[in-house]
Image 1 (cartoon, rainbow, N blue to C red):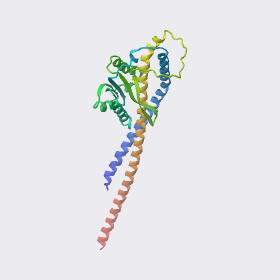
Image 2 (image 1 turned 45 degrees about the vertical axis):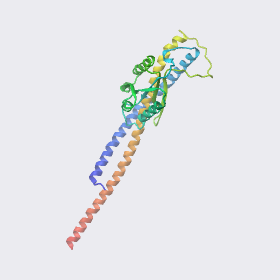
Image 3 (image 1 turned 135 degrees about the horizontal axis):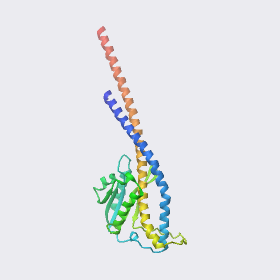
Image 4 (image 1 turned 60 degrees about the vertical axis):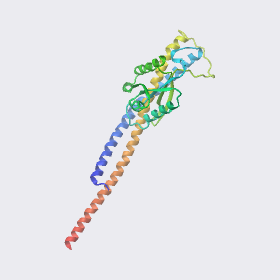
Length: 282
C-alpha cells in the first residue's frame, strides 16, 4: 500500500484536475448557449434560401460556373475540426470520416482543413490544399465568405472537380452528427412532386439566380462552420462533465484508501507502544 504522503499528493493532483475540468465545462456551457442560439436562428433562413435557389434553377436551365458538372479527376474534402482538444471524439470522428470517404473515392483526393487539430493529423496522410485556423476566433459571415470564395475560385479554375464539406452537425449538447455534404458543383435536387410556382421575377430569373447562387454557397459554408462551432462546445461540455465525474469518483476512492492507510498506521503505532510497554514491565 502506498504511503500517506503519496496518497495525499494524488488526492491533491486529482482535485486540481477536477477543478480545471469543472471550469472548462462551465465555460463551454456558456459558449454553447450563444452558439446554439445562432445556428438555430440561422437554419430557417438557410433552408429558405436553398428552396428559392432550387425553384429558380428548376424553372429554367440556368448555367453558372458553380453548377458545371465535369469528369471528376480530383476531389477536395473540407474537414472542419477545432483548434483545441479535450472534446471527446469530436475531431477524431471527422478524421475517420474523411479517411473512409477518400478510401472509396475513384479520383485523386486532397484536403483543406479548418481547425488546427484536423490539420495536425490529416496533413500527414493527404495532399493538403490549404488550412485555416483563425476563423473560429471571430466566426462571422464576413470571415466565412472569404474562405468560401477561395474554395469557389479553386473549383472554377479546375483545381478540383468536386468539393465536399465534412463537419459535425449540431443536434443537441450530447449529440453531434458527422455529416458529409456536397458543396460544389451545386446540383439542385430534382423533386417531381414539386409544382412550379408562378412568380414574377424582377430583374429576371437569370440575374437573380447568378446573384443568389454565390450567396447561397457562402451561406452553406457559414452554416457548416456554425454547426461545427456549436457541436465543439457541446462535445467539450459533455467530455468535461464526464471527466469531472470520473475525477470525483477517483478522489473519493483515494480518500477512502488514505483513511484506511492512516487507520492502519495508527493501529501499528499503538501496537508498537503496547509492545514496548510490556517489554519494559517484563
